[in-house]
Image 1: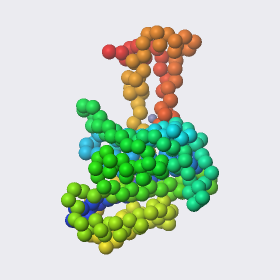
Image 2: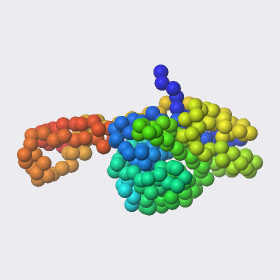
Image 3: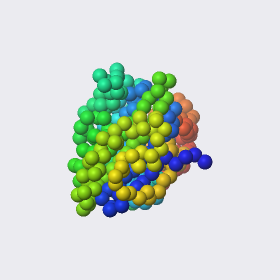
Image 4: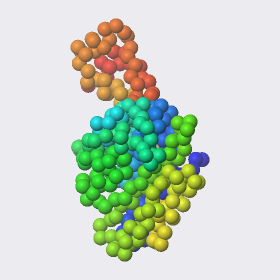
Length: 290
Ligand SMILES: [Zn+2]
């Protein structure tokens, strides 16, 4: 049995909810699928870590959350999709995006993301998905999300995301903390949370040092009473299927199919998120039409 890596808690007075994840394995799976360069690993890893935490705040079992950064930097678009248990898949348009380290020795995530918009889509399976937008502030992901929550959802949010890339290009440690104040938060608790904010920095360093999500939670809640709701396991998970891809292909017209199958009997479609390959004949596609 693998260890649980997500913990959900709330301050005892109900002022804030706190989520902590160790996403190291999830990010290593992303590296395995996308063969990312270090800066791309950090960018994709932070977006996936954030999406996973936001996914755990969805209401229903079949809800999905998509977090998309569309900047003008060399990374191109970065997308992560999470379910309500925080299981997440991710994609970066340019996995080779990489820049020299910044003066402070950190990976230049903001540099490869660039300026643009971020978008959050919550799909509840029925009706139109709810979509929120905001501008990318720094491209460092955590700051951008705090701005998103403040502007688009009016929820005061503190977010810390970290991805530590090792010299062999694997992810040495990755994790995230998301803290949100709930309406009518008690002033005294808010002050204590603000005092503790510096303790939330360097989440990947804490994980690298051997701290569990529970240890991290205890540290950032120093002096504040809290209750743990639950803990569970979130991992890299792709929900693609042959049927779903076939449905997407079924909207091609006869002319488009003539073109596609002009010189071959089968086509291969590769899932962007997990590299799974699916092979279809023209007959497969035509017979799936309604
Ligand atoms: Zn897939």
